Image (tube, rainbow, N blue to C red):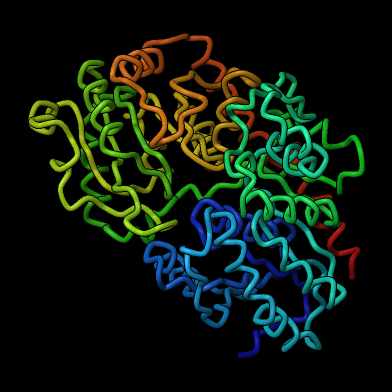
Length: 472
């Protein structure tokens, strides 16, 4: 199937089919083509994943929004490799994406005579697709939906790798961090040195070969990390954040009735009275930890909204929804807390954080979640689970002073945060330091100012547009 096209300078996008990477990449594509209307158009190539219902629902909703300047195109379906062949999500998803090279090349080539393609944007796990860009003579760019601090680690991984192999090294000097970074918060997949480690090294080498790297951050938030990226042979870096879909999944939520009932419940709560617990689109916790959280919540006594999901039933699969919360929560918990809290399944997180009833956020510290909380001025208590979240949590607490700590180094199935620690962390979040709350509110204003005309992120986006046009 050929892509419909227009004679404008065109950029092509492809992103990992996971909410934390696909959603910000789509929003960035919208911002890019809308920055100077008429100068650029974009085609977003979507990887079909009918076996992942939530992502499938989202991609189908995107296809219905294609317009003149931003078109969505569904690549042919390819059977994913068996998860049983991999030890990590990184290796599984990277291999799956790599299978789409031919489809991507065909999609671009079929219409190449009618378009001037001035750039191909890939994300964290799509770096192998740059081989297609090289074949077609198209400049490659990385859209990095994680922070600049973690980008500095990823870029330097081939150099740092020999140090990581030494288990005696307890702290690491990473150029994007002012403080030494403890080994215990480094990316676990990289540290385990299995198939995920091999893929990360491959991605890191590809990142260094890009013409440019776009980071979803802002100068006012990560000045030190961004400054560090200007040293050495790093591709030109553009900080264009915050890039957020502020409607979250509210527009296409798979359970609209649940979403609306959650909003109605929040509407009935006093302003700034509710602590929100959510561990991301891929986040879930095992039964023993869930019970400790429940006990800690009940003891803390604050109003709460808890997005609780069941761990994957299949290897490397996404979380699922509980058929009944009673099977995992302490006996009588729902009845005892009925007047003060609500336990629900997956929610439209950005919409929840925007609600006036929310006062604090217990978060897994995915970068999108951090940016959403800062955008709405909601303080975070850190509870990282997987991927680079531990490094994000370390940066937010130790480098930036914008969060309180429940844990920085939690690994589900290995650690157990007791109820007393949960209670203490929630108390600190909800009743803690006024200076922290003021600092978060100040960052909220900086996030908005950066996107205004002549703001730092606005100027960075303008520079990127000019470079893309010059590629013609």
